[in-house]
Length: 370
Ligand code: G3P
Ligand code: MG
Image (cartoon, rainbow, N blue to C red; front, side):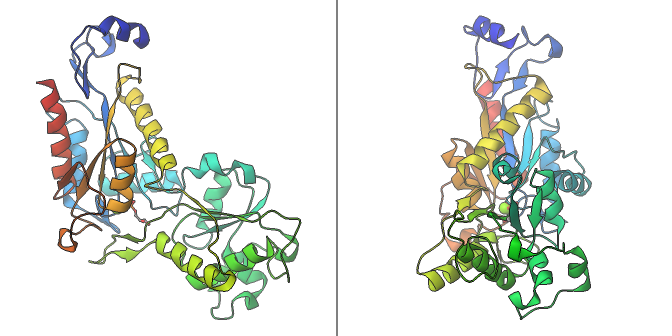
C-alpha cells in the first residue's frame, strides 16, 4: 500500500524525520506525525556503569516511550560492543534494569552479527573465547555452530598446555571432554572479553601455528590457515570503576604483540563490532524493522529515515555513526572525558548525558516540523 501512497504524496509537504501520512496511514487516523527517525543507544558509559543504571537513562527512555511533544513512540535499539550471554537473556536483564521492554528486536550485542557470519563453520570444530566459563558455547550453538570448544576444554584435556593456572572446580565442570590431537580447529571467534588472557593467547598461538591441531610439531600443511574473528575492537570501556577499563581490543593488541614477537608478523583477522560497517548496517536493518513494528512505516525512496547514535566512545560509537551517515551524539558519562582533549572523532553534537542527548535529537526533529 505504502509505495502507491508515497507516489501520491510526492507533492505533499514533507520534512526530514516526520511525515504527514494521515491521508494514507488510516491505521493511525488521529496522527499527523509518524516518526521516521530512530535512535541507537550505546549501553556501557551511556545507560549503565557496569551493573549500575544511570539515573538519566530511564528518563531518556521514557521520552522515547511517548513522553515527548509528539506523543509518539520513537523507534530505538540498544547497540553494545558488550556480550557474553544470549540476546534473549541480556534483553530480559536489561528490561529488569531499565524498566522498559527490551527484546531481541531492539537489542544487539557485539557477537549478534555472527548469526549470519559464522554459518560456513557450522560443521567444523571452532574455538570460542570470552565470557564466563562455557556460557558462550551455548550462545555459539544457538547461532548454528555445532562443534564449539573453549580454552577451558583445552586446559582440561592437557593441563600442561599452560602450566601457570589451575582450573577451578566450576571451570572443570564446564569443560567438554575431547581429544584435541585429533580435532582440528578451523576458526577462532573472540565473542567477548577473555577472562584469562595468558591461557587464551597461548592456545590461540598453538592453534594458529599448527593450523588447527594443538600440540602438533608443525603446521598441518594440508589445512587452510585458521580464521581469526574479533567481535569488539574497544581498547577501553567504562564500567563501575571511575576510569576506563581495558577491553577486547586491548586483548587483540596483546595477542598480536605476542604473534609478531614469535613469528615476525601480525596475524590477519576479521573485525566486527562498532565502528565496523557491517555492524552499523546490521543496526540500520534492525531500526528499519523497528519502525515497521511500531508505526507500519517502511522505507521507500521518499521516506529515508534519519538515524542517531548516542555513545560515550569516539572510536566506536561516533566513528561508526559518522561513517554510516548517521547523526552522532557524544556523551560525557563514559570513556570520553573532555579533560583529555577533543574527541578523536567529531560528533554531530556533544551532550552532558543520555537524557540531554535525547532532548537535543527530539528538538532537532521537532524543529523540522514547525
Ligand atoms: O565490553 C563492552 C565494552 O567494550 C563497551 O560496551 O556498550 O559501550 O558498546 P558498549
Ligand atoms: Mg560505551
